[in-house]
Length: 590
Image 1: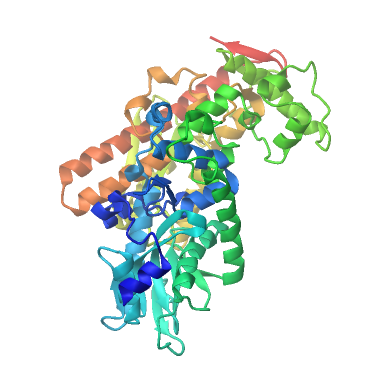
Image 2: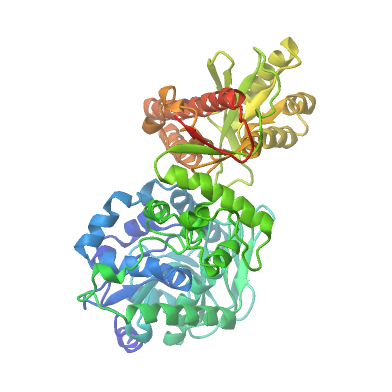
């Protein structure tokens, strides 16, 4: 009976991809992304067993904002040789993305919390999900089902997806005072299955993309006649609560996204697609890479640079680049070609002036030279150096089950370039290591009240103040004394010059002050986000008792933090060496 109902409601029931058939839960663990960079099960466009396009929720997200992303996914999944060759150097290792790992951790935590809140048997997690197993479990009126699997054929194309949670009508999910998620009975349970889809995101807020995803599951339930009229929802990150979505609005978003996606799918088939179909090799603009979860962000970045897109300019507002293009200024070189800042309709002259100056120096760098445009005459303003000066950088980690960051490393380089780090291997050690850092800094300050602590950007003073507050005002006077001596070099650089690279990140600036000879960037972690991933590996190794492995991982983070501290010191030295003859002049560096 169930088998007949399945076939009646879904002609693609048996067309599950070989990847999912082989290892459905393992694939989900590898590809399941939660939070800012969320990827769903079967997230990519694919070609199914009938040699037709098949898609999932993420393709709907892409279609709403970035046709390039959809087209490229189609060409990749159709195995167009030239496209595969093009993207090969830019494939991301999703298994090493911390948001993926933490999204899966959050999912596991919520599953366990909901299960603990219900009587035995009222929470069922499907181990090898299929549509048959999903429907059979729903037919038993199980209050909460995890990992229900659905396949539908909207407008003739296969869609499939895993709902993190299916909640039976008459039940609801809530966040308790301690932040845990619980399920409880709130009303009458129907005689026949009526469910609402829920998803779990390691995110601090809702998003229309989540509505589109949920609406895909809702559409499947409606086709089966098993959808409740209750709102569907998202469980957010720890203590961030729950977001509920009304059905009509969510379905409207879903239908709009589906219409846009189908319009693209209809243009070609897996058998006829060529590399010409891709058309562009980057997202429309830089922000789309983050907002729509671009598959190949490094390819986009390379293409943006090759095409000299306007969004490369520092502090380019997203509403300004369309106005420049409307005026016939399509890229950085076009803008740099003007003898003076051009007049652009509906754009204040202060902005065109700033963008034009940045374009001048950026064009020099894009043409192969390192260059700065001065904003001042003379040298940047900095305090007098002392032998007690410190160059400070911290590392922190955001645990899934905590509301605050765990500060696990306080690193400092001295004026003689020696390095010291205070490392907390567990949250229980955080206060002790904070004390050690405060002792070290206060000792330096006592030796010379004119010393300063240099850092790049604002996390360091903010985190020091946060720690004093976290521990009930612990040594707040010492913390405030050190914060008062802190100097952020980022605004110093920003006020002194415009870099030809267009970026004020310290790693982008390093090329100007020749930091490579003293740093080991290529062999260490790539950035702060990767340091957090390395710390997650450290935590896992430590929990398993693999002390040698944990020690080796921490050494990598230690060396990375040393490089950050030393780079801050080298930047400080270089800034002091600058002496511009005039403002608004391009200086080519050796």
